[in-house]
Length: 249
Image 1 (cartoon, rainbow, N blue to C red):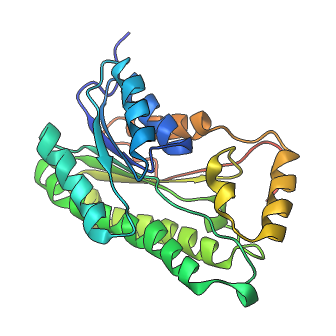
Image 2 (cartoon, helix red, strand yellow):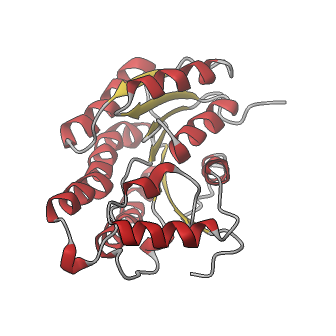
């Protein structure tokens, strides 16, 4: 059976767990060479061994994308190592949830910098190569929180609404160069993300709500990403909005 990404190079951010880890594995399963980035080198090295089982020669890139220079460096390192970068999956992010009146603005600032500015910085860095080749795909992982805002999620929703808006504006700038842009908006996914919340009452409420449903798994989201990046060149899946069957909002 032919592998649909055998001639492609991908970079996945936030690859040390959850959606990022599952996406790196799913891309390698389809034959892609995969660079993986996150802060936790030990997790990345363990993942790299799994990627090698699919025949990939992974590149491990320890980085903190709060630093926009780091967000751009990992793109350049990938391009130098493999000679090109065809697929950028911007997945790195955190979720701090709390009432506005009680907000830790320093923590919210870090979330905005990582979820939005880090994503923008890595995207900016990849465009020159993609434009030169007339080909490439940027996949941005957002959330249903970028469609529907709820109490205690003001800043997180602001970041994800921002990712959705950025993705659409970017698409309109780069489509003429043959570059595709997709935004993935998952609902509740069973990952480490809820551990970030930081506000005890909100965290308990969210966990209780999530545990009452059959949650999406990281692999479900990874498969949606693989679907986007394996379409023919004339097809751009602009958005995938996906929820657990049991999730109403």
